[in-house]
Image 1 (cartoon, helix red, strand yellow):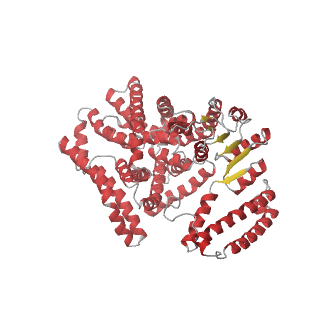
Image 2 (cartoon, helix red, strand yellow):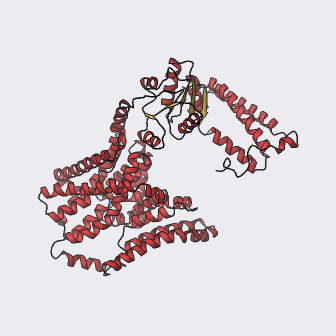
Image 3 (cartoon, helix red, strand yellow):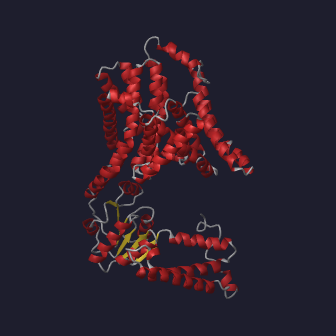
Amino acid sequence: MDGLFFQSFVYLCAGVTAVPLAKRFGLGSVLGYLVAGVVIGPLIGIVGAETQKLQEFAEFGVVMMLFLVGLELEPRQLWAMRDRLLGLGGLQFVATALAVCGLAFAAGTGAPAALAIGLMAAGSCTAIVLQTLSEKGLLESDGGKASFAVLLLQDIAVIPTLALLPLLAGPGAHAASGETAEHVTSLVHGLPGWAAGAVTLAAIALVVIGGHFLTRPLFRFIASAQLREMFTATALLLVIGIALLMTLVGLSPALGAFLAGVVLADSEYRHELESDIEPFKSLLLGLFFITVGAGIDFSLLIEHAPLVLGLTAALIFVKAAVLYSIGGAFRLRGADRWLFTLGLAQASEFAFVLLAFAAQNAILPDAVAKLLLLVAALSMLATPLLFILFDRVILPRTTKEQARAADAIDARGVAIIAGIGRFGQIVNRMLRSNGYETVALDLGAATVDAAARFGVKAFFGDAARPDLLEAAGLMEARLLVVAIDDRERALTIVRYAKRVRPDIHIVARAYDRLHVYDLYSAGCDDIIRETFDGAVRAGRSALEALGVHPYEAEKIVKTFVKGDRRSLRKLAEAHDPNLAPQENAAYIALAKQAREEEEEMMSVSRQPGKGATDRAWRPYARGNAESAP
């Protein structure tokens, strides 16, 4: 059976079967898609030659992905990462290209072919790496940011690589390439260098200026139609149009889409664009991974197994060695350095395009190009396994190494702050600005380094280690603030501190009510739910927006908070850590009783104020900084 519907059914069926299974076993969606492709392609042969054309179409998912990445970055953020983009990314590209080129030349490959192989090996797979980092929530880590900078530079480097490859061609090859070029529609084909440059710059200017000034009125006009499908169609039209324009002037469509995303990052339509593009991006990327798996030539692999597997291992090893060395030079440490090393150690999806281009220009023989194509696909297939190696072997080991390399603490204060992330740094600022000396600890090296740049002294180390906590002055301090977001480590710190210093006052950040109960049992004195105060303030604003007078709203809030604290204490005593709340009969009974008491208290608090004096009182003026979102 053949045809569009059958092929669509096969690809979708493979994806929806393999990916949930892969996720269930903790292997990630990328490996699920790749395995699905291997099953329906080389293994049982349901799909065949159409995978190559589908892959060219599915690569548009990479374009959409970079558009979405651009939407998350404002221009000033892009400017802020210029050092890593040019320094780290540029050095990685050049060093990897030279290393692979040297090895290929030493193995007997001619100089032009060796240089072409080196340039093709320098890239990494943007689709796999960004998708995996996003799924694991590692894009904001130091290693994730460094990986993103390198991937972006590699995408940019595809342009000069495509321009350089024809210069490496053998005698007589240019005629063939020229014939090919005639079939390619291009706005710069046949133009002199200065004119081609001017057209290219004009295209970039059109994307930047048009994106800034024209898209808002366009989306406003489309939104006025109140047809969601028209907004989705316009979003797709925008991305496809930019990709087409970039292709016509010889630039990377992914780079153009990224640029457009950056321009639209501060647009009021940003979130609608993200939500409309995201499903298409995810499906196309999934299709791309399936076609990579389905395109693996197992007959060629079996025929040249030692050579292909050896080349794949050599490629990953050389790239990893270069990445690890450069990561160290750019101050990547511990887990971040290994994430950077293992995450980028595969070939790029652009290698498929570059290898075909190199074969067309007679830079590489067809047989060599097919072997290298297989090596590139296998290196991509190995990437999810490298991420598993990072998660299960490297990460636990580097965490221990980081703990052993904790800073020597040479300060004393009345308070110890465990964790100076977005929660702890506010507490630290309030205490220090009121004249109280603090000793701040944090397990994140990047957080400690960032704090130091703003003149905030903090020590790198795990506050859950008793020796480190005592070195920070636990036996003399009056206050311990536990502001880390790791529930178990927070409990460990509280239990130890209360055991050796029963008199110390402990203020802890809680993730939710169940965490409150655990901290309460551990002996914590003040427990602050990280979202409770914000939610209460939002509730007060909601009441006022519905017409409740500010005085009445404030009275309701105070009653609600008082009642919640009282019921929290009662429920904490009924909480059984070995039982889920919905299975704990005593807890459920108390919760129902607390709910009835709360409703009764709130009905009393809703009574009108006593007089004009009370109702004239306002807790804050509307529109000031306090009420701003």
